[in-house]
Length: 133
Image (cartoon, rainbow, N blue to C red; front, side):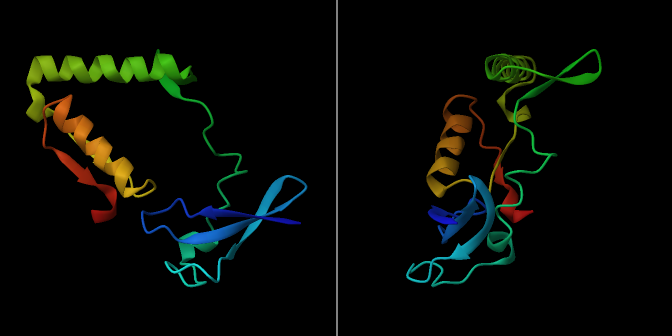
């Protein structure tokens, strides 16, 4: 069994823990007792944070809708589609018609960059955060 130090992916607090692996498969987590952020404790999300890694329901490729059905796509195709549709909405209905919802699963710095993209590129202040919902 191996223990790999990491940071919890579920919020921006920065709690540390170890991923416990067995035969190259994550099988659990252990708190990091010396970490000043979480002081050896984890919330319910932290304790269960590894369960999605090997889930058969986990998406591991982008999906796009074609003829009414979701089909696997490349990242280039999916991101290109999103960008073109956002630009179309912006040009037809104005920047105030766009809204962006940030994530609790990324760092504060990544959310800041997301907000800057919404404001600088798409000229909208309609930015919110899912942790507030």
